[in-house]
Amino acid sequence: MNPTPSRERICLLTGGGYPYRRDALGGWCRTLVEGLRRFRFELLTVTDRELPSAPAYPLPFNVGSAHAVALGRDQARAERRRGPVPDGAAEAAALLCRGLLGDETPVTAQFADGLRRVAELCQPPDADGRGGSDPLATLPLTEALLEAWRQRQAAVTGDRPPLPRLSVRDARTAATLLRHAMRSLTVPLPEVELVHCVGGTTPLLAALAGHWRTGTPLLLTEARAAVPRQRPTEDRLSAAVRTVLRRFRTSVARTGYTEAELIAPLSTYHHGWALDHGAQPTRLVQVPAGVDPREYPGAAELAEAPTVVWAGSGGPDSGLALVLEAFTEVAAAVPGVVLHLVGVTAAHEEHCAEQIERTGLGRAIRLHPLPADPRDRYTVGQVVAHVPGPADPPYRLVEAMMSGRAVVGVDVGPAAETLGDTGVLVPPGDPSELAIAVVGLLRSPTRRRALGDAARQRALGHFTVDRVVRVYGALYNDLAAPPPVTAFELALTVPAPRTTTPATVRWLTRETTS
Image 1 (cartoon, rainbow, N blue to C red):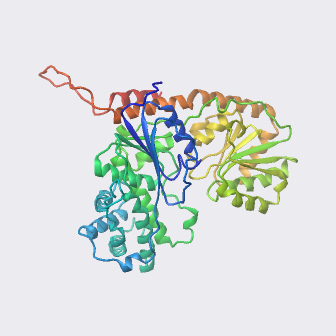
Image 2: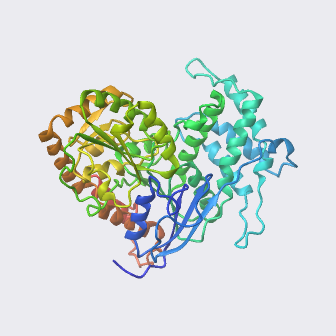
Image 3: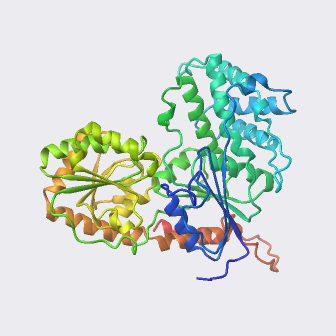
């Protein structure tokens, strides 16, 4: 490892996490930054949540800067009080909304064109915070949405389902939410050789705007669940507004797949999802999640009583509800069983406690805030119930496997390909099946210990952090390093075949698929 950072600077762009929060992707980002000390990192996180003033993780010497940008809330009636519409704003809004409601199968060029024009209108302030423009308040999104909706409904055919009814009020609500989301386009990015975007729609919008303004190469890590999912806070919105938000997130993801020089999905599941949404196969390099075996060394079962572990934030969107429902059945079948909820964040402790109280099993459930030492995360149990939330990355399953515990996993996302035949998979959304599988392992010590040993060996062979660091170092070299010195070539009568795929990427593709 070279202790001196190279001249290549990387902007690691996240959505409200590292280094300010110990969230689902914080540990993954920290591993990358600390493992690639030959690069200099400029850390930027963009979020609509309030962030702590100080980083939650210590910053290594190769971090040049760390900034957090909290997006302000729009005024609910800003559009009613808007001034003159800037030149090109109406056309940009029309293109964006027509593309938003177009065919979802191919990449919608209209949406990307409209989004790029909006980004061009949004000039970020200079280094001293002066200047910059914010045309979002005057962007005529309500009118554009209503007109695009009318055109789409008029073009509906027998095999094309109609959209839900969009009222003027719905259009105004959707326009306000879109305007707030697109505030990410105004975030200035540091001067770097490569932008590495990790996260969802919010950081990707900032990355796209920076990419369009400066031409800086973009590396996109696809680590989360499919982006069109509905968020719990959106249940109260109308069907039309939810449709707009879902299509907007999908369209932003497709635009990112089109614009990024390279895309690094964490699994075959994410790889396939990116392909289905317009990513070019030659730009995809699959890099599975990995953890440090030294942090999860494995240990003999500590408890004699039957114990189950679930790891998650404990929030409304974390899989906690299914775990508690299944544990009610487990407790009825296995006397004295204890459930450990580990890794619960401070922001969700109250919600988690309320859900536990509703079960009436508070004496059998132990609540553990996020432990400082990961060695204690899974070893307190005999069986791990892996029930992830939509935003949880795959490495939590890898952590459980590396800890040498038998895993009962819900068959969603990349769980099946990660776990292989070293654990038990159950259908999603079925607490009874989850309970049956957990009870079966609690009653069979020999089987669960054999599965735990097999899971650890699989993790050691396929999901270690050194592999992740090595592959991303090669990707950074391909995209951020200066081009090679021009060499003299012989003039041939028949030109030699050429490929646009970087040499390192060709090597990585062979390695990651072997």
